[in-house]
Amino acid sequence: MYVAPLCFLYNEPSKLYQIFREIYVRYFFRLHSISSHSSGIVSLCLLFENLLQSHLPQLFYHLREIGAQPLRISFKWMVRAFSGYLATDQLLFLWDRILGYNTLEILAVLAAAVFAFRAGNLMEVTSLAAAEVRISFQL
View 1 (cartoon, rainbow, N blue to C red):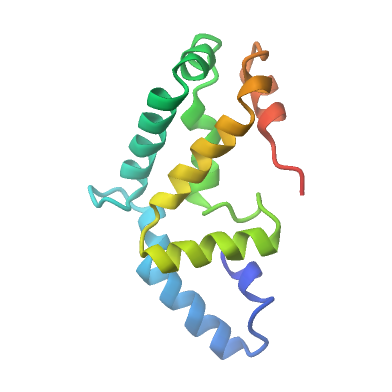
View 2 (cartoon, rainbow, N blue to C red; view 1 turned 60 degrees about the vertical axis):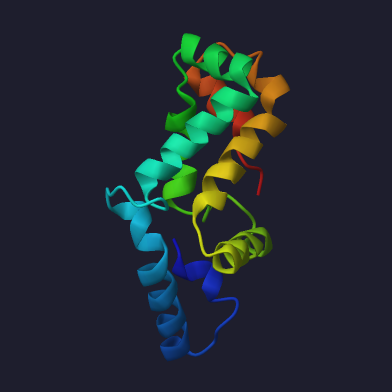
């Protein structure tokens, strides 16, 4: 999940492991453990919901009314740091921003931005399944 995109950058397995280990220990482990850290998955979920509620309140409440919790859709994106959802070049650009800004908060911001981008389509859905189809990534 996290290693595959890095294979495009490093041919040597020992270097690949070294880089992966450093990124995982510094950032991605926070996505797999519950903590109160500002870059932990709980804080990212809260940030995502706050962004969606404050900037797209109609969409947020529409999705909740039809039983399509926005966090239920976006959680898998954030926990995987969008690996498997974005094209490799886009994913590496995203991870570069994580390294550059030294925070995982950009994952929640991107998840909210995806909802904002697809807001028109999402306002027309009537179920969770339809929402997931409308917001799915086309690789």
